[in-house]
Structure formats: structure tokens, C-alpha cells
Image 1 (cartoon, one colour):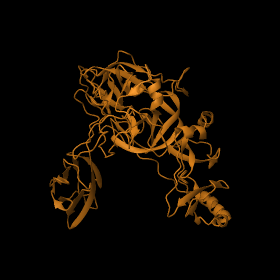
Image 2: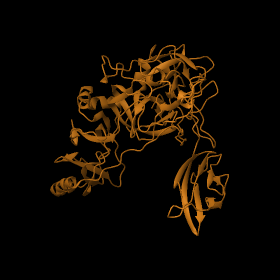
Image 3: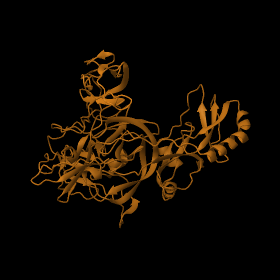
Image 4: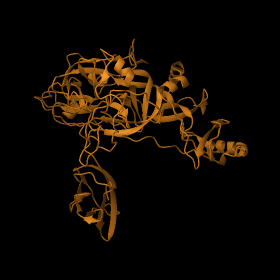
Length: 548
């Protein structure tokens, strides 16, 4: 059966097909959870294999579509998710977490038109006026914007790049925090002048919900996820802390902070869909784990704690394995007229549901890099270390076993796998071979590292020195996967680019290596390009480009 699994929004459809082993299409009898034709609880399916999701969220969420033909059966698992309401046109007053951007963020050469937009992240105030908060590259075209540019909802990418009948501005007078390094000539690289990618625009009265409500940030009902405002009280981010965001492309997603105090270099384009113009280096940033936390188009989303809806960061870049966010405290201080305050009730709020939502059709999600198979030489090196040190390690009564395996901090390297029954001190490396600690029959004593601790463990000067090495695009402080009781210096390296060998330990910290494609503000992964006739007096081909 094809597909073998599917994600379907409430009330949406998914076409399945049944084929023989030789690929010939078969006429099948279709059922859902053993009921021919399905039912309203788990979804229905017609005689041609077209599945329609239920209108209420099923519990448990385990619909199984079955095709029966020629005395054979095949199954496909279905995950029902809430619809993505972040990329659609809203009625005023609009809520945050939605598609939007600079109405002038397009390039038209007479035959093709390319447009860009991202997410209107949150509402902020200077105590008198209300402003939409997002990224410079969303509201101010990467330093190329003008105070006369209109800010619109939805963004141009969700209006088919139609600049002849764009919606009225819901905010005006956009102002961006300088993003490009200075001085800069050619495709320069340097520190972002204010260490954030941020911009604000003053709301048009009546067009924006003044309570600061963000889509899908509230409680989940059988048919939808409620909108809710974030807390106005920021918190200090910590490694392993669960966070959430609601953005244009991937809707509501949740994940964990992977590193803090991170220096990261991010590429920016000269114009919408154009070539790389400059690379800005940001220090003391947050990196969030996983290639599915965000996608192109989620730039500008507010990142909050999953448990209390308290702001921690502003999403602005990423790659196929990670998402990057500015510290929200830095953003609120740096924006024009700052310091600003997030609009919402003070103190901890109720938890984010973290229930799944659909991904907007024009967004591209991606997966992280898979672990490499250890080479013969690496296997020999690790085996030699085991023969040399296993007896010594086993003399510790806390140690149950010593074996060999792969490192979780650097999958291209092997490790001595030390299983312990209680907390004990295990060297991070032996003769240059990493150690990996497995805690048996006990709770793992997780290290606690927040951004303040991270600054003490990794100085900015040390990070800057490491960032100068080829192939390294980020350095921060996280938790070791080889020993979760210890912090680690996390290296974000560019896949396929040679870099200096990263030893198991630097400055007394274990090292952890995460490989991925280039961090960038937009145009990452696979761009979605939709050629179509332009809705204007002349016909042209357009392409939608989503800011991350």
C-alpha cells in the first residue's frame, strides 16, 4: 500500500493505493480500524482508497487503514493532527504566530517574481504603543527595508506573490535592528552589530489582537487548539528545557534546548531568493534540537517554555538538524525604542499542549543526519583501549560492564561503553578514546546548565577562536550524550566540509559534534518553488521563498 503511513489533518483527505508486488494497481476493499469504509470516530475511506480524517481528534490517535485484495492485506498507519491555521488569511483583529512580512519583500525582473515572508511572532509594548515583533529579515528585508514598507498578513508567500492585490497593512513604520556586519565589503563575515536579528512594526489600530494572543499556544479541544497569550515574564534558558513555538510553516511544535551560550554564523541573502550577501556571527544564542522543530517560514516565531509559556527566545535561523534563537532579553533591549515588554499576563501560565499540527503545504521539513558506521581503523582503536583499561575500570565497584560501541557525542567515533549501577567518576577519554556512560537501574543524574553557567564554561573569546576554524559554524555549551551527568562543548559542523579533528575533551569539557547543512536565515534545505501565472496585468512566473 502507498503510502505506508500518513499524517492527516482533522477533516482533510489522503489518497491511498493498493499495488501488487510487481507494481500493478489493484482494486481493493478498504477499511479503517477493521471497519469497512471506516466511521466518524477514526475517519472514513471510500471504495477508491480516499481517506477523510475525523472532524474530532480521535483517542487514542491510532487509525489504521487496511486494503484487502486477492486474499492479501496491507496496512498503513495514520496520525491525525490539528489543521495548520498559521499560514491562512485571518480576520481582524489578527493573532500572532501567523504568516506575515514586509509587503515589499519580492524581486520582479519582468519575467519572474520571487517573494518572501515569515512569521509575525509576538506583540510587544514600550508602555504606550503596541508593536509586532519578528526578525529583521522578515519585517525589514535584511537591512534593506524602509519605514514606509507595509507589514501584511498573510505574507506574500501565502498570497501567491500577488503584489497587485495585496491585503491592507496591519502594521506600519517597520524598524529593524542592524543585521549586517560593519564594515562589510563583498560577501563579508563578521559579528552582527547588536547580536540579534529583530525588527518591530507599530500595529494599525483595530487590525491586531491587543491581548498578544498567539495561535495554538493554549489548550487543546477535540477540534482545535486554542490561541493564548504568552507570559510577559521571560526566563533564563537552560539545556534540556522543553520549549515550544507557533509559526507559519510547522504550526505548534515542541522540543528541547540543546545548547546555550552558543556562537553561531548565519548566512543572509542579498535580496529575496538572491545569492548570499553576508554572514553574521551571533554570540550567546540558543540552539534547539531537531530538524522538525521549525522549517523555512517559521522565522520570527516566539520561543516559550512548554510548561509555563514564558518567553526564552526569538527564532531566526537554522538548518536540517537544529533551530537557532536569539535570547529574548537581548531582543527586547535591542529593538528601537527598547527595552520593550512582551504583551501578556505576568508570571508562569498554563502549559502548552504540544499536540501536533499540520505543516503548511509550501514548507519543507527535514530530518537530521544519520549516524555513520565505524571504520575498521576506529573499531581497532577502541578495542585496543578496552583491552588496556577494562580491568582498571572494573575495579570500581560501581561499574557493571565495559564494552565497545559508538559514541553518542560524535557518531563517527567509537567509545568505551561503561555501564554503572550507581554514580561514579568515569574519565571522559582514555588514550584519546571517548567513554560513554550507561546508567543501569538508576535515574540518570542530569547536569543542569543554563545560559549563565554556560558563560562560565565557555568564554566568548574561546568560542570566537574556535569559530575561526574551517567547517565549524557554531560552538556552545550543552549536555553530553555520552554522559548526561556532564556538560559538553557542542560543535556544529558543516556536513561535507573538512574541519580540524575535534578531541574528546577541550578545556576540561567533553566535546559533542552535530553535523548539518549551513545555518541560514532562509533558503535552507529544499526551497519550495511554485511556478504559476501572476495575478496582475502581465503574466509572469513566480516563486515563493519562505524565510526560516
